[in-house]
Image 1 (cartoon, rainbow, N blue to C red):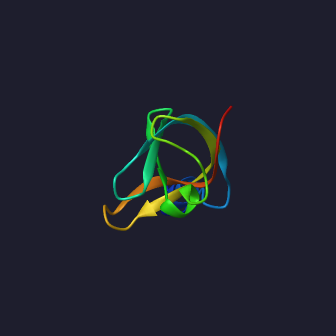
Image 2 (image 1 turned 90 degrees about the vertical axis):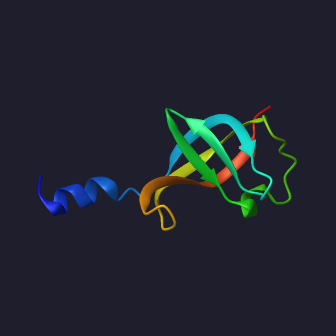
Length: 84
Protein backbone atom coordinates (compact mmCIF):
# COMPACT_ATOMS: atom_id res chain seq x y z
CA UNK A 1 0.00 0.00 0.00
CA UNK A 2 1.48 3.35 -0.98
CA UNK A 3 1.69 6.28 1.43
CA UNK A 4 -0.91 8.20 -0.64
CA UNK A 5 -3.40 5.33 -0.37
CA UNK A 6 -2.82 4.97 3.36
CA UNK A 7 -3.16 8.72 3.90
CA UNK A 8 -6.46 8.90 1.99
CA UNK A 9 -7.95 6.06 4.06
CA UNK A 10 -7.03 7.82 7.31
CA UNK A 11 -8.20 11.27 6.21
CA UNK A 12 -11.90 11.02 7.04
CA UNK A 13 -12.12 14.48 8.58
CA UNK A 14 -14.14 15.85 5.68
CA UNK A 15 -16.96 13.38 6.36
CA UNK A 16 -19.04 12.97 9.49
CA UNK A 17 -20.66 9.75 10.63
CA UNK A 18 -23.61 9.09 12.97
CA UNK A 19 -23.20 7.49 16.40
CA UNK A 20 -25.29 6.63 19.44
CA UNK A 21 -24.30 5.54 22.94
CA UNK A 22 -24.17 6.26 26.66
CA UNK A 23 -22.15 9.30 27.59
CA UNK A 24 -19.43 9.13 30.25
CA UNK A 25 -18.69 12.64 31.50
CA UNK A 26 -15.29 13.31 33.09
CA UNK A 27 -14.86 15.63 36.08
CA UNK A 28 -12.76 17.91 33.86
CA UNK A 29 -15.82 18.60 31.70
CA UNK A 30 -15.14 16.51 28.62
CA UNK A 31 -16.79 13.19 27.82
CA UNK A 32 -16.58 9.99 25.80
CA UNK A 33 -19.07 7.68 24.16
CA UNK A 34 -18.17 4.10 23.25
CA UNK A 35 -19.45 3.25 19.78
CA UNK A 36 -18.56 0.16 17.73
CA UNK A 37 -15.49 -0.50 19.89
CA UNK A 38 -13.99 3.00 19.71
CA UNK A 39 -14.14 5.97 22.03
CA UNK A 40 -15.55 9.19 20.64
CA UNK A 41 -14.27 12.33 22.38
CA UNK A 42 -16.84 14.99 23.26
CA UNK A 43 -15.47 18.47 23.95
CA UNK A 44 -16.89 20.53 26.83
CA UNK A 45 -18.22 23.14 24.36
CA UNK A 46 -20.66 20.53 22.98
CA UNK A 47 -22.01 19.84 26.48
CA UNK A 48 -22.45 23.52 27.33
CA UNK A 49 -26.05 24.72 27.42
CA UNK A 50 -27.43 21.15 27.26
CA UNK A 51 -29.05 19.07 29.97
CA UNK A 52 -27.04 15.90 29.45
CA UNK A 53 -26.10 13.82 32.48
CA UNK A 54 -23.57 11.04 32.95
CA UNK A 55 -25.02 7.79 31.56
CA UNK A 56 -27.61 9.45 29.28
CA UNK A 57 -28.11 8.04 25.79
CA UNK A 58 -26.98 10.52 23.17
CA UNK A 59 -26.61 10.54 19.44
CA UNK A 60 -24.74 12.77 17.06
CA UNK A 61 -22.11 13.01 14.37
CA UNK A 62 -18.37 12.37 14.64
CA UNK A 63 -15.27 12.83 12.48
CA UNK A 64 -11.85 11.22 12.43
CA UNK A 65 -9.28 13.35 14.24
CA UNK A 66 -5.70 13.25 15.48
CA UNK A 67 -4.94 13.33 19.23
CA UNK A 68 -1.79 15.49 19.42
CA UNK A 69 -1.20 14.62 23.07
CA UNK A 70 -1.30 10.84 22.49
CA UNK A 71 0.06 11.14 18.93
CA UNK A 72 -2.58 8.81 17.52
CA UNK A 73 -5.70 8.82 15.39
CA UNK A 74 -9.00 9.19 17.18
CA UNK A 75 -12.61 10.33 16.82
CA UNK A 76 -14.27 13.58 17.86
CA UNK A 77 -17.96 14.44 18.09
CA UNK A 78 -19.01 17.51 16.11
CA UNK A 79 -22.69 17.43 17.08
CA UNK A 80 -24.60 15.77 19.93
CA UNK A 81 -28.05 15.68 21.43
CA UNK A 82 -29.83 13.62 24.04
CA UNK A 83 -32.09 10.88 22.74
CA UNK A 84 -35.63 10.68 24.04
